[in-house]
Image (cartoon, rainbow, N blue to C red; front, side):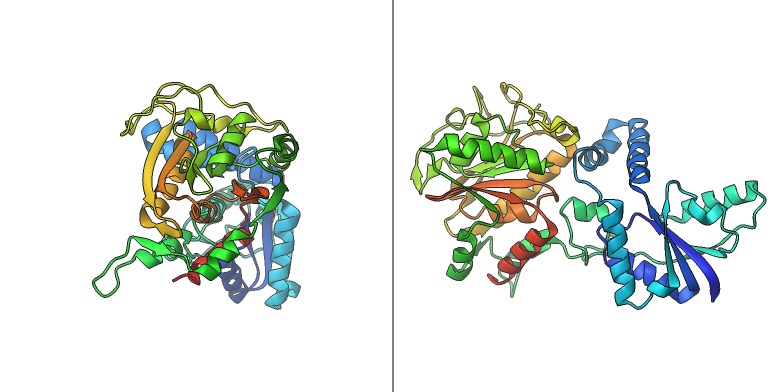
Length: 413
């Protein structure tokens, strides 16, 4: 066993992979120095990644570039240094390892590894091995002995892809590697030769979902002046990475006050009665949407919302012909269909890839569309939906909120 070894990382939203990596390090060293990236280094790392992306072709990097756009600036934020340090300390305390650890703030890839001569080895993974080589090259330049590089395997999620903080921030998985989409699709999997295309939500769960799942802004369509200031205030306060509206009235209101909607889900009905007949009725402007829009068609660009730093709500862009990517799905009342789940997931993938707006027009009812909207969205998103006779609910998408939604869905199987 080594006397002193070092590990380093951002350790954002400390997950199962992080915990395994840290625990294995303590099996290799009597003392472990943990280099925790500073907030300024986190920002610098994203800037470096974005610079590398700009040098590659659009074909190869469109999706990756979209992810970076979401993660940087005003998008899905990495937890601040103090929060990440507190989570580390709590974990080390629970595992009775804190007295053998030293957490140090690092502002570059080297950290104390090129100054602390007592360090004997660096613990790395297949993804950080190159960083270990970089440290040793620098040590060689300084006349220091190279460190032993001890490689630890990565921990995989349910889909056999690595558990990563980026995937957690994008809303794909939780900290234990469980896939939210898999939980939603579980009822649709083939069982005894039969496959279902829809899940009926039982009465108990429906009643639970009828309760406000976020902040309730009280008011109705006859009292918009009361709703609007508070709704705008909440949006400015939360600075969402993505705004999703579920329901006709809330979609229309969001358009009226120029909220930059990334995804709108509606059925042209209010209280199960048809009220609207066109996108223009919902405030989308003069649009002509083909029934089968081209996959590569132009769409309204909302990427400015993800990169903004001001405290104001940016105005909506003026929409034109084919400026929106539209999809129609069937979803009966009190059900969540496989088609709806796939459509919501694909909409988010599209938003991440190109930052353009999507709409999903539901034939039937969108009364439960808020479930996949919340469960599959990136952290830091906001889902808006109407609370009948009461007002509008503002749901900030957090890990806790996703966990709650997943538990409710599991009870419906």
